[in-house]
Every structure is written in structure tokens, then in C-alpha cells.
Length: 261
Ligand code: ADP
Ligand code: MG
Image (cartoon, rainbow, N blue to C red; front, side, top):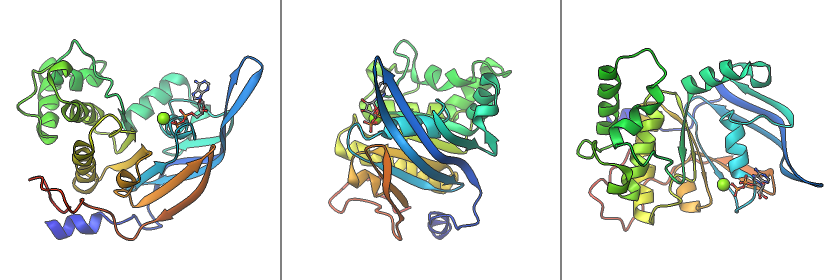
């Protein structure tokens, strides 16, 4: 079992399918008279089975890039291909359907609905689907169990720790079973130990459930979980490489979840 996971944990080979592709992508924010080039000619491929980290200083364009990778925004120049579709040529509703099917989002600030409990938050993205309330609740409960929150299903965000809230947010990202998870600074609001626990959950999703994962972080220790690391400075990729070995666990941790995946 362990061996099997280790095998699948390696960087995908060059023949893996490309799921998201950015070609010479530019993004400019216009504010009054001035214009700010947040992204300047980004080329990037996300392949099936990738675990990519995007690292860079504050203001370097990480979130802008993540929004474009997630097709939440359109570029000013260049092309974005999602599952073979040029997103500019899709209607907004068609894009929303394809995006919803393929991508789950996780944010730094969790973005949970404060008045809903964990179960209801996780079930939320299924609301517009033709499935019964019973099935919706069952699915949400199953996924909360998968992220280790079976005892917290009726808690509201206020009654959960930061780490637990991020687990709920990850469960919500998983509810429609997307093959790709995009996480913008998922550990940014967490203490270091909880941050590593969240990374372990993402590694588990990558290895056990074959999720393709892209995370944004400014923390080099978090970036080390990925097998492909991209550095962005001032809106440009200046370095990317594939690591041979992933950082799996900090040596001085005594957490009982300490597993090698
Ligand atoms: P990061 O996530 O790396 O901190 P961002 O992608 O959020 O960087 O921002 C990149 C640059 O674009 C920054 O200079 C930021 O101030 C600017 N920026 C981001 N979003 C907007 C916006 N909606 N309007 C104007 N400028 C923006
Ligand atoms: Mg950001």
C-alpha cells in the first residue's frame, strides 16, 4: 500500500495530460491614469498528477496568477486553455460549468459562511445540482470524515480552530470531486504546525485520490511539499524546476499523524 502511494507520489512523466495551460499571459490592473502590469508573459503548464508550488514575495502576482490558472479571471493578453478549451471562447455559464467540474478552490482566509455549520458549508457547492438533500448531506458527511472532522460536523466556523476551518474549506473544495485543487496561501493564517498538518492532508489527497494540486505560498518550507516549484517575482516566472525528492515531514515534529506518504 505504502509503496503504491510512493510510486504515485513522484512527478508525473512527460506524457501526462496537460489540464491547464497558460500561453504568454499578461494581466494589467488599471487604476485611473496608471496601469500596473501584475503578470508579464507567463507560460505555464499544469499536468495531470502535478503538485506545484508557486512561491514569491508579497505583491509579486501570485494571487493574480492563481485566479487565472483557476479561470476565475481572463488575461489581457495571451491564452488560457482549460481541459482543451480556450476559455476566452466559452460563454460565462459554460466556463462556470467546466470550472466547477474540474477545479476546487481553497483560500487563505477559509471563506466559510459563518452562519452555516461545517456540514452545510461543505454541501453548499452542490446546491444548484439535481441531487436530493439527503444525498447532499451524506456526501458532505463522508468528505468531512475523510478530512478528519467527523466529530465537528455541526460546529459553525466560530466553534472551530483555524486548522479545522481550513479542513472544512478543503472538504468543500472536494465535494464535487474535481481532479484539480488550487490553494492560495492555504497555510497563511495558520501556525506552523497546523500549516504542516494541512499540507499533509493535501499530500494525502494528491497521493491517495490522485488530485492535481497547485498551491501558492511565500513560505519555502511549505513550498517544499511540491515536486514542481515555480518562483515568481514582479509578475514573471524566473525559475522553475522539478525536485527529485519531496520534503515530507519536519524532523522535530512529534505529531501522531506523522506518516510518510
Ligand atoms: P501576491 O498574491 O503575490 O501578493 P497579487 O497578485 O495579489 O500579489 O498582486 C500583484 C500586484 O497587483 C500587486 O502590486 C497588487 O497591489 C496589484 N493588484 C492586485 N489586485 C489588484 C486589483 N484588483 N486592482 C489593482 N491592483 C491590484
Ligand atoms: Mg496573494
